[in-house]
Amino acid sequence: MSSSSDAERTEIRRQKIGFVFQNWNLLSALTAGENVELARQIRGSAQHEDESAQEILRLLGLEDKMQHRPSQLSGGEQQRIAIARAVITRPAILLVDEPTGSLDSANSEKVLEMLKELNLRREQTTMMITHDREVASAVNYVIEMRDGRIVGTR
Picture 1 (cartoon, rainbow, N blue to C red):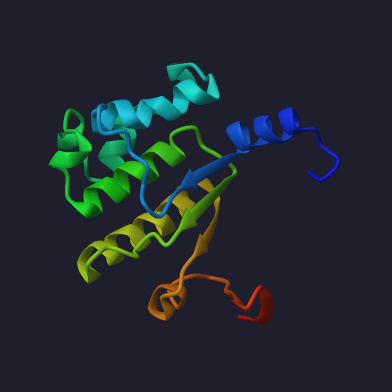
Picture 2: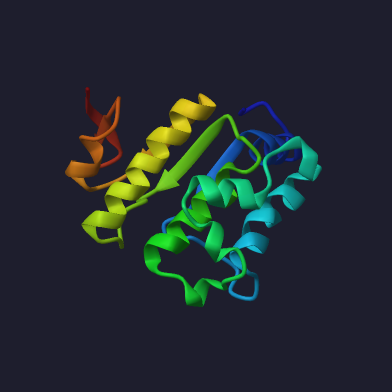
């Protein structure tokens, strides 16, 4: 990557990496379905190449929320919409920042189960950043860092 040009790195991010940000970054003027479809448009892929937003939202239990705007959704629903947007193009790597940071325990459990299911179904690598030890205990491999240094693995 370090020898790649900026344009090449941008293309790799667009084609190979899905991002789920801590604050979800949903566009308030778009519906849930439009927020998910936006990722496909940014990638430049045709709809037939991937699952539809409706199929992804059905997988995540949100098929009845397609026409809702983010302000009409709960925090857990918004988080799942952000995940749907990140996975619709089937990226090889999914980067997830504090996926349960602002969720209650029930929604946190749903999000973690969903990430595991996506990993199994799509053979997709998920890298998650969390400060929550309970969340970290639910994953297959942990790299623990302190002050920017690796201090342990399990």
